[in-house]
Length: 150
Image 1 (tube, rainbow, N blue to C red):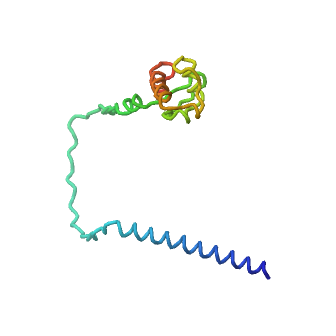
Image 2: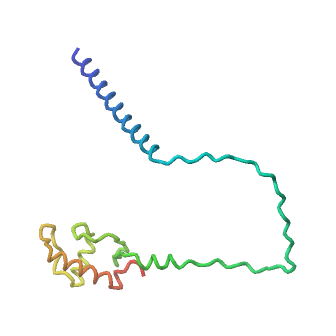
């Protein structure tokens, strides 16, 4: 008897959670619909069909195909992208602002280049060390072998 009561209680709780969840979705949907401005109804009027004027063919044929204009914006965005490339594996890291989450090879590269004394543990970091690390990462970005986007 207690098992049946337990099963019925679980089913009832699941039903209540289902109803509450659907009510929240309905409220959010109605708020979204209320926030959108109503679009005025567009009346469709048929206009009389007008004949399209025929163009006269050109007397001389222009056989030149216009060349597509190349966009220089892609080159500019590639030059402004920041990133460090691991010279050993070719791995590119784009997020290294926080030393705690910086990849291991970047930390080892800082030590190998002599920009930092050692690889610091998270509990060894303080404001002074972090400013030195940020300056060292800026110097590492300028080195040719670590540039990801040339």
